[in-house]
Length: 96
Image 1 (tube, rainbow, N blue to C red):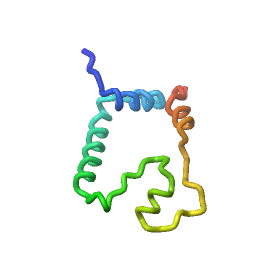
Image 2: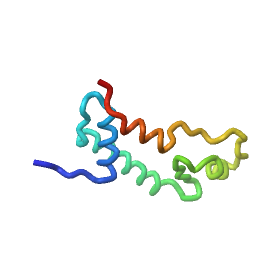
Image 3: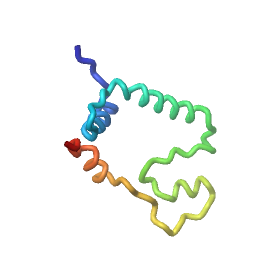
């Protein structure tokens, strides 16, 4: 019997599985994704909009600093995983 998985979660899990030496069963990780998404939804519903900043990776310093009321730093915004680095890591065959 084959159980379908959500496409958004499924894509991430397939990439994650490709990097693991021991196979990862998507259904063992799915509850974590569901819990994470439920937590994000609860925070958005609880925190007043004027106090909440949903900061996405790649947004840079500007929205974060504006929200905090501080000056934008001179240093570039940290970027450890560019999209291409992430893809390279996630799609790399497992080590033998």
